[in-house]
Image (cartoon, rainbow, N blue to C red):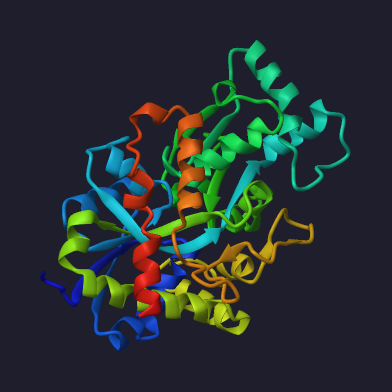
Length: 353
């Protein structure tokens, strides 16, 4: 058993990378005996592949990705597990100004009412179909909460994914794609929804909190083999990240986190597009007041024991969405998959020790 203390941890430059970034900036990794180098990536696929190759020891991962890696969906099969939920919620759907005006016109509305009902897309989808076109959405990865939240939102009004077009783009390319009319809408995490609003190219019509309530969004991903060799290291990681997540639950600390995230080393973005979601505010449209979403970015449930544990029921829900999307067949899911991948037992053992 190696139990290394020098780690390379991969992350995506998004608002909800805050637990990893602040654990580093506050010296929490060092406090718990770790020397950590943070490695910023541009796409979820690259992050995943580097974890599989052993170039990264641990990574910020989309909540469904450990299942996808373990099952070999969308890439090589590689057993990955998570012992820690880094964040819940945090995504939103933003539509272009052109799409906004189309929805208003075709439904004879004076203005959009938020959160937007997906039913208001029905007439527009039919109109596009008659001209051989589809409404085009972008998400960050097929095996992402973004993809499944979009699916759930459309399903609320009886709209199937096959009735729209979905493309995959890195988060940092979403706003420019919207501005250039390459896409009509996107589902992404912060700060890109607020960036689209600030630039006047989009309207954020609902958040993931409006679709799913307090569902895991990002998790800590490590390979099964690495964990077996580094159980003590994993305990150190969990301890540092738990302390960081708890620190982030205090509002004054969140503004400090936003200032750190804005720097070139991390998001390299303006404070006014990072801070709102951290402070429970969803920018909607230029000239309109923001929506108050207290749980927009959630990192810890201090009043809930084991609030950052990847629970079996959470994994079960995510797998159900993957089945509904046609990404995996139920008969191809091993019986012990959830308990092997969403390791609440590791979290509970290490946190209580």
